[in-house]
Length: 361
Image (tube, rainbow, N blue to C red):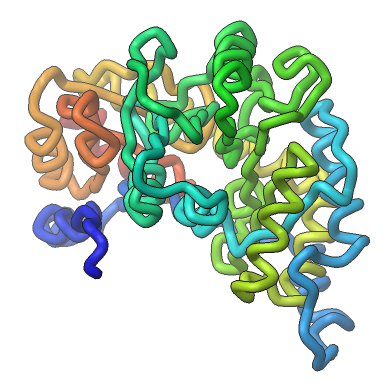
């Protein structure tokens, strides 16, 4: 049976990418959130360390050292206490987002709630499971359908919006009343001083029942190429995911587990990366606003969410003529039809080039 999936959005940018690449100063590609900064030395050393020489199969649950290091990291960075047993490494975060509805046993008759403006893989995950999906930022907008899974994302991709504690608490209560699993995509959490994890006691009341927090090391540790992520939260839900993943062979390679352990144990490189992105954000925001775009939300994360009050494809085309490639907001849902997403993931030199071009426009 053929699965009904949308076209891969970024394939539609080929013409605009070629136009941007033709600029005399070269392309500044701000259309994707792919890290460009170096992998920290402490992580590279761990990847090439003793674990690389071990010939046997790694465990799906990850090493005890990795799970303890992750539990320590979320305690230090997010003020969240989790049992290391309730930590499960994943092959990056995107595979978990895509397969979580299936791993939880969702299917026909189940509904997945995703944000109005959302990372496309939330929708894909629902489609892969054969479930329905609905876009909603407010629980009052939902009808009587049977909701099995609710996705939150703060700081948001694409908008950079940070959801207040009161909103998070309300959605947690709503999901629990209906027996729905609440999954919080927290890939950008380390890139914010104000965002809260759904597992924070101020949000969940000290209980992780029914809650999952999904994390990536791609953003803060530049490990996109390593495919390094993890999920934690409700021990019963994590155990359920572990059991299915063991059968399916969804295992993070042992050298990557060692690299993840090193990344989780070192906060200095995370803080340095946060400062780098903050500097790029400030420079690009001034340039975009100087070019006549209005920047909305964009408090944290890796993106600026901007509008020129026109169809997003027109904005993409105009910026591409200046050698700057951005993503049209329509990739993230109908509500983004007049916005563009501008990533901070380019080198300082390329960010400066983009700012100069936008300012001169």
